[in-house]
Image 1 (cartoon, one colour):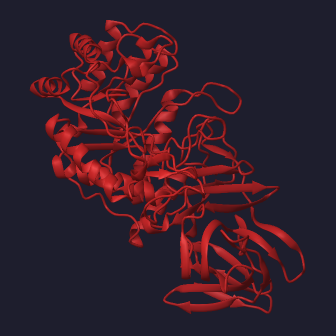
Image 2 (image 1 turned 30 degrees about the horizontal axis):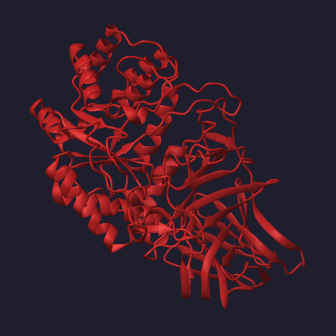
Image 3 (image 1 turned 90 degrees about the horizontal axis):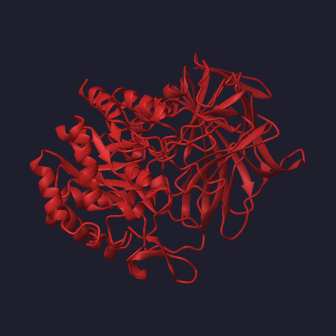
Length: 568
């Protein structure tokens, strides 16, 4: 890298990018892409962090690195420094503080300050781009959106307004910027692109959300720690890593490679068993279609699954794996078969095994249903909010559950759902110190390890395509299909399949993919989706008699088409 120094700035030319770093104010210009604000705020439970003096940067060059430290005097910390680390290919921004406090919100690429010019308030980075790529599915569907539209990368969400953005929970923590506007909800324009990813491993992922917050041509990133991370002494934030890319898919690959290079994401170390690749039948879509406006969960019943599987077999469809979906269990938190619906689940699983099939059970993550309060994350009133994997008593319970379900019942694994119901709130109380992404990883690690101890080939399916979660899942599920774009126009289900598969394939290429299949807007959409599934992972069939949304019947010829696609 070549650096030229003047009285007012440093000019850095790496061969891959050009960066002009100011010597008079906390900013840098990444040529063609961003005007970086090198301010940061590290709020605490005690108060908001505000910078009241910025000092000139200090440059250190070593081993083909250029490190610019921007010291800042602050209201909440003994010292605060924003560090800009440049390699030949990347520019990384992080904040370092010393002192004592409990973290609230942390912002990078901007923050609250009184500058030496006496300008005051919140400052942001400028973005010289037209679109920003979001790797997590959202509703409305909008893969690349204008840079003026916010993005949330989070483990908290549901289907209520403003919260349907945790279909992947967690997604890879990477955004990507482009110079062109997209032509449709799932269109990805050509390059060039600039990736912006978060460098942090499980220990550093103790926040619930990374929010991209644009306003009037500026933007900052906000990390929500929610008062659950204690700092005593020195603390360094995750780094935001900027790197040129030819596409958002390459930006995701860069993100994974960066985490792996820094020892922050494990390689998948498990053994892939042949039966994991067999096509899946999941009963949820059939339950929804049969419910006809009633409760689909009431229709997770032994006799109905036998009926559905018999009809599939009549038309040449014999799935290698059957998922018994919601609600086969009496209680979510401490699951046991509901004898009114599954009077002989052990015998039923044994009969499926005799046919050469495996059986997965649907598991609702985080549910406190059936758990004592002392094994749960609790609210200010002491009421259970979520199962607490940091509590040794809950971990022991999971061991017992796995012995019961994988040992006594002889089930073959789990479809783990609702990871987006991670607990969130500064007043919530957990037994241990982890929070956010880290606590979710602890939950999945507890389930994964306990399952593998009982049955080493147990298949654990999640919707968590973050590279740091490679060691707590065997297969990534693409999750529920969404409906419309921001104009209210339908978005083809198969286009969503292709987008989601591309995200997972670049974030976690060592993992198998469960292509999912619910919900479908019409029979035509369902057939197109089913035809595309084998090219995008393990095909999953959800429907037998009819499509739940359109009420269109499924014919024997339709099922024979699916059987042919599976066979090929």
